[in-house]
Image (cartoon, rainbow, N blue to C red; front, side):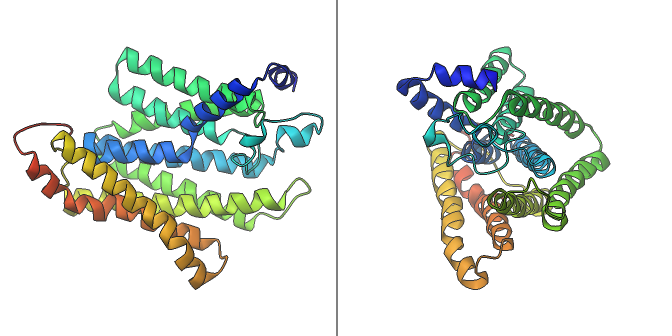
Length: 309
């Protein structure tokens, strides 16, 4: 807590606002948007790898949270204060940091894929900024972000190494392992008996996150299989068609994310598995249904540009 207390002492209103903005680079929304752009417009193989590693890393992070049940810094030390606007985004257990984990898998995968020193430098900077922002805002300790930096790095380095192997069997085993990790997380949060350190609010968040991960992972793997076997969708198009693809596609995914919530609530009440259904449908729309239109967008730019693989 010594470092956090020092950071608390140097806070200023403008720095608070800056860190609240920068910390969003580790948010789920950034991962989703960046992943969809890569998948739809740039390089679909790396787009699927990007999504798989991000989801796998999040599953590992959530499992560690559920196992260790570490309280947030302001719970460990009631005299410590956080930047209040950051409280809403700190809705689970503290250890390890989810935002940092997401930043490492997101930007780390980009660095490995693009293999350019200036890109790697920017990605490392983004990762460290997110890690620092979590501590500055008071929502995570150095141990929280340090472990996420390590687990994220292992996920990216090991995952990219395996996914670039020229072996169909290895590729399938990596996908199986990613799905298995999401299911292990779900089984753990549903079946493990409560302990004295459990917090009902944080446990509910963990169950919700586990169902979301299972749904998103299943939908992403289905989309990957569908493209390899049937779709073979194009990523090429003129620049304005690419903008249309991204804008309309993201609007569709967000519409499913928001629109299905009241419908599923009406059907299943507050049942947590409804979150899994919703995220499964989101990824199927983004990975299967929307790419079915890409031949149309590609024909609009035929012979004019080449954007991806």
